[in-house]
Image 1 (spheres, one colour):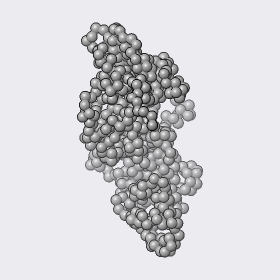
Image 2 (cartoon, one colour; image 1 turned 90 degrees about the horizontal axis):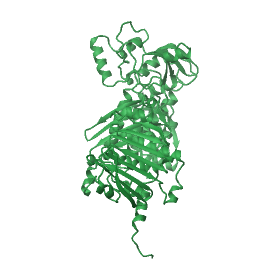
Image 3 (cartoon, one colour; image 1 turned 45 degrees about the vertical axis):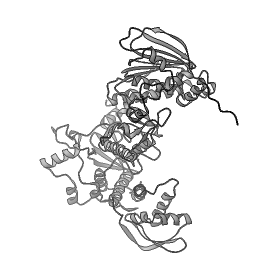
Image 4 (cartoon, one colour; image 1 turned 135 degrees about the vertical axis):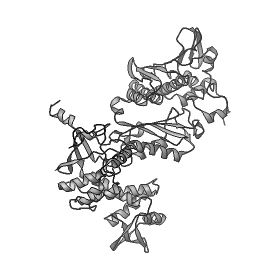
Length: 603
């Protein structure tokens, strides 16, 4: 066996650099975090050649004297903590003291720094971990770090870098995340002399997001707020019309630190349940303010991962905050970011106060679901006149005050629609606030049916409907094992089963409104058999309800009477989430009067 030797300092530093400095974006992250920890309010980041040729980060922070400047290049030297006990209360971004040492081990670093109150600053050059020059220098208070020839002495790492454009883009993404985490700091990012973004530093998150992501994207986002004292949730979440093909557009911060957190990412996704199509993911920027004792930031060399002490509570708070933000927003594609005033309603009396919002009927969704909900049903009939009157809000000052309070509490703003015509194969044309609305009758009926099933099963066992003729099912060994392991789950869902011998099961009853006995029973077994699937009743119920709604809803190509379409729209307005079907497809889109006028060259 070879003898054990102690590595020289250069080799050890290069190994440490491999953990901390993966690419130019890592250097930008470490230097930006140092600038933020130094109290900087204005930071400039300049890259040349994707950061492989040169990276310069200049700030107006506190600066360092000559002694601290030299100590900053030592491993495990830091001003952020003193003892191991301080790790339980880390509020700074950097604390390990490896950033400059690791960067200098694989590049040429030129540091210029001056603390406020000193007449001159200090210039220090370190190449490959060795100090090669030092001198006084004149500069404004703050610090400037220039990194040149990154990975010059580790060619194996350098040859695996991507193109300059790709590396520059990754560095810009990292700088943008830190800019969004600290909206009170003005950050300018340039690449090859071209300005990529500049945040204003006003402390307003939407303005920082607009600078980094673009104003058009921010217009499709709503503010998020929530928490329980120990954990506070804030940020911006995209409307369902704003979605992407991957989860990487969900950005998470903890106490101002950018992190990668599958826990929080999944919690954000849960808030969009049934609002996005399968395979699509939301855009969101979520900032968590957590008691430092409830989060461990010392679990990753680059500090990109953390460990939470109250994972379940935190995930629930994030999901609830995002869901509440979406619930109070207008989610109709084409009607982003605006409400509907009374003056915009068709037939609104002249002189009615324009700022007063139109409120949909307040009758709960489950009390309005009166459409025939069976597969292949004939055109649905509207509810009786007496029931329609009962479903409308009463007139009078008391009702107006009640409605206003309900709206102020965050009730959604669904427009009042008047049916115009049916457009083959599946669309209802309607007039409403601000223009033309097109409703997908199948998607709308799906949403109504889906919420009816969920309401019936809310916190209770589902009602079973007995079959006139029980059906005999022959199960495979795997299916029989699943049924045996989850018998209570099947009973709570409304299935009535009688076990026979040799894997045979007699299906005597199934949940109400589920028209196909064998199909739905085997759907449950298939769901439970999926790899990694946890047998959560809530998830299974949502899955079954969505499948049942799709099969039972009025089909594309089925023409509807005006009365049937009016009834469908009235019931959709009373749904809890009327803007999408259970699979995330939109139920209604909006074409504004302004766009119609533009199309007809009237603007």
